Image (cartoon, rainbow, N blue to C red):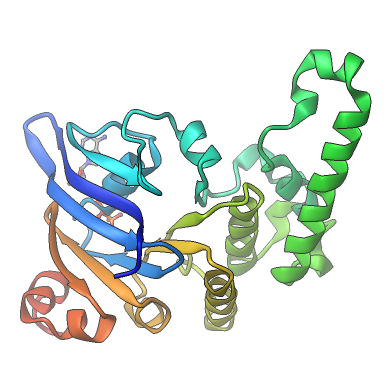
Length: 255
Ligand SMILES: Nc1ncnc2c1ncn2[C@@H]1O[C@H](COP(=O)(O)OP(=O)(O)OP(=O)(O)O)[C@@H](O)[C@H]1O
């Protein structure tokens, strides 16, 4: 496998007396397209939250680009290049699509009051760079037509594109996507997949949790299967989906 960008080692998590993740280890290659599947309650969201720093694990470690980030808060993981998509916050629904992109840019110099007084030129330059990046992603994601529309007016698929755009504004090395195809019509599933492929070709890595197995297996090079808190299988999608244990666990053996 190519050099790993994200390396998860021996992650454990329990809630009360219930073990939700038991010794989960996997590595997602830099710049590669990886998917994670598993039945409801397998622990995917919990694992995502631990990888991105929103929750602490009870054991194990997370390495990103070779650095141990287990104890780092989310904001520092983002600075290292690990982004994840979020639903556009409700209070951002009235902001335009363009404003939502600009608001996602990190490290805005204007947030520091002393810069407003002492370094106004620096702030203008940073704002111009953020505005230019927003225009670039609006064009790439085919959202130019709705750039001035409120985010709340977008279709499900357009919202997913905007979420991807917000992640891109942090200039990530890797993006973790949580169900990018949920509630999205088939045409936009194809468009979102195409944009992800293009970003992957530019060297951005992806780890995608998704229930739409058909669309996910067409997109990724590698699938990880989580079942009852354990990594059950990993490999090329066709191999993994043909695996008897995966069919039994994930599809009740009927697929
Ligand atoms: N904060 C919590 N407190 C207690 N139990 C929790 C908590 N968060 C998750 N769980 C439990 O952990 C297990 C794994 O949940 P998780 O949401 O990670 O699974 P999932 O694979 O993402 O499921 P889905 O595909 O349905 O989203 C479930 O049994 C869930 O009820």
